[in-house]
Amino acid sequence: MSISEFEIIERYFRQVRPLRNDVVLGIGDDAALLQVPSGYQLVVAVDTLVADRHFPQHIDAFDIGYKSLAVNLSDLAAMGASPAWATLALTLPEADEQWLKAFAEGFFQLATQYRVDLVGGDTTRGSLSITVQLGGLVETGKALRRDTACPGQKLFVTGTPGEAAYALKQFKSGARVDPNLLRRLNRPEPRVDFGLALAGTGASVIDISDGLLADLGHIVCASHCGATLWVDRLPRSRALRAMPFEEVLACQLQGGDDYELCFALDADKAGRVREIAEQQQLLLTEIGVTETQPGIRCQHDDGSIHHPRGRGFEHFLSENND
Ligand code: ADP
Ligand code: MG
Image 1 (cartoon, rainbow, N blue to C red):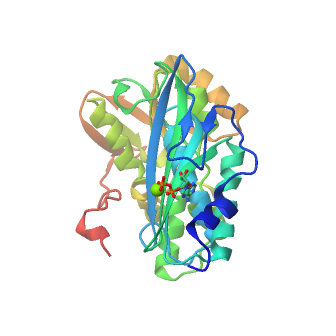
Image 2 (cartoon, rainbow, N blue to C red):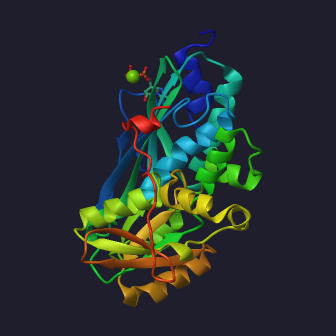
């Protein structure tokens, strides 16, 4: 590499001015030293993005930097946690300074927006791969978990799921990709503020990374209940309404990468939560109910049952190893 590992860190990843005063030691020592306030629990998530698996190798490095943090922010949002500290393990085929500059800009745009400090990492050479770990804080006992849903609750989803998957479908088929949809694939908006507002409501929450059906499946499995999903009520953006209904529905149910939140909530808390969504100008849609019968039933408004083909994204299934 024409530029050393040390120079990469100094030039692109050490922040001039850290944002947080709970970082006792950030980049530069053997490990970071972070102060967790009393009365709070530490929430930690990690996600890896591998080139040509999670993103095409040659897309804009800004988007890669942005998304590597966005997916982790989404995980913390789904826990009701306030994001705080990130570490970054970066494996690069070469030290391309233009790439590093754009990557760091994308990463720090979101980091700054959510007051996250980059407190350490590791830099190695190899096939392009980015791992971000994110730590955050939640008041003790207020975290939002997958295993707390019970029968008779309302199911909600934020935003308009299916858009990222539809963009990917267009991209893979070589068709023109609708720029509005592409933006949702490359720059997902983690629902951090809404997750924070849900903290303490007892909602059972998940972020949709592998598809609504698969991820709602995790809630009902962990909570030992089931659900009916009203497929005709899934919210569709203008861009999605222009596409064939069946294709859109498949993307909405089985397409990943949306990073919207799906949750089950007691009916008596729904009004308050709707108000919060409105204040945040976030679309919130009631999409079904939880039930005692295990599994998920996809129901049309006329009562007929929709049987989706295939399933959500799963790395080790042979059908995804293309
Ligand atoms: P060590 O050999 O002790 O593991 P390194 O030489 O790997 O330390 O890293 C030196 C310092 O730079 C450490 O504080 C580490 O956390 C930080 N660091 C390394 N790579 C990155 C990166 N890509 N982003 C942010 N910090 C990094
Ligand atoms: Mg190291």
